Length: 541
Image: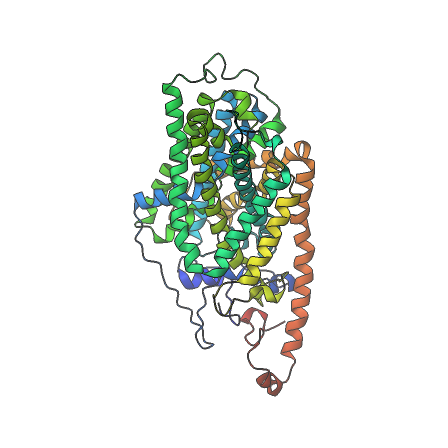
């Protein structure tokens, strides 16, 4: 990326598509003037020898309907279905209520995917929520998302996956020397061991990304395959247990016995389900490469989402058929317990291998994208920066963002160590991300009102973002009572981004003003610098 030329989200969208025939007038305040591009990944600049062109290269449309469904399904299926079921069951109190929670979580994710599909096709720029928030609300909101993503959403999400990796391996290692038929519970295993293994997983993945980007991307294909095998393994074990004559947990007379109707517990249970469905917001990223996107994108969303919901429900039914309710409710490694219940130590070993590798795959993809995000933000001179410049550098030999990867590794390990465990991390992560999901859904309504003539290749029903927003407000309010510490921490980080934004803008304003007043003969001797190309939007400052 060329540090000397960074386009705004609106400019990038104009250069990549002629859909925007008008732009909204922004206030000419200092704060708006400096947040030209809330995240450099939105840029479409090209840099060879200092010159950059405005022509954008359109992606080839090679993804058909079947390919789109498989891509979206692969993005969604992850570690959550192997860790959240027990937590959801303990919060809802009954097998029937837990299945309803999974169904509601899937429907909510489905509605969210529909909202993102409309935004993604109407605003054809890279960057996802950053672009949508910047276009709908302005640079402060998009900066808030960038800051929150780097400080809490990305690292806490990675810490969650690493914790699952640590819990599965530590429980299996604890099981191997034992002679008992049952798997040791989480309470039997020292927490330091789980955290140590979790941090080791983070370090391994970071080292892989430091060594070679092609290596990390190539291994991701293998990780994806193993992830699909893991979910198939769980469903097959459920079928085997049912054939053997499983439990009666799902019998009509037992399904809803002991249901907890607390609103706060319901919200926390939904958070765990929604974390398992996390990845639905990625569906719009394949739109630019889809054949006949106007018809294919709705097909992909409305096939992949219900398919995922059905498979997740089947996996949960497998757990409930093969094991007692109390065993499922107490487990964060429910797939390991399922394998042990049906096939003994061999089954638990297979489950551990599949899910541990699957978790490493999720960590790998997160490390790849998050490190680039950190590097881009640190290296942008138009960014209202909050990261030191050295985090933007790439290693000259491996061509990887080593400093950003080290920073990301340290931050993730901190969350692993002090995060408070699985449920605490789920609550913290979910509150942070769903605040911005709410803003994105409301952006659909805002743009329908403010820009009715904006071309929308895909248009969802207006009731979808309204219902989605209403349920999301409920999800954001309930943790204030049920998980006040996590809510305070998450909203505290979001609020902290506001003064950082204005302070950073003020510093950037002073730096640019100083540079503009340097005589040209001195500038020429300074050579190419971060401010050698000042965007047009800043010329009058």
